[in-house]
Image 1 (tube, rainbow, N blue to C red):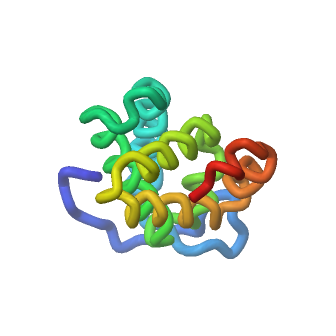
Image 2: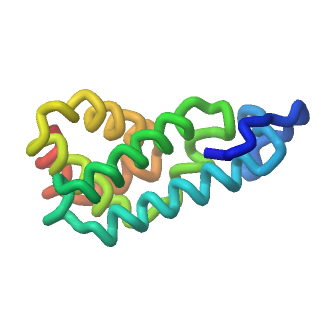
Image 3: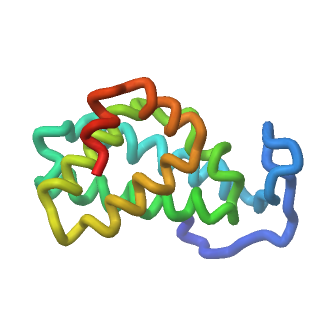
Length: 137
């Protein structure tokens, strides 16, 4: 994420998450958030038809990196970083497409889906879309 590779020692509670895990100061939250937003935007731009092309795989690998970082809880609660990312359905379909077409990515795609569905907003989005739910690996 950051090029400096340095962390500050100060910590704050995660904004909007009472009693949530500590968040490092120094912009890690904002940096991770921006990375995730840009990655989701890139996935939306690449589109489902090109999910398994070079640009799609690059976008997926970026998504994987961001989701792993967000899910670790080191920067903030996963909910704080992942809940309002949109479009959820497009991202899930994109990951499912890679899962179905690229065997070598199945472990990563399953991991991304699992981490996302541990966030209530993503789970509710999936539950609200019967077609998407049926496509889930």
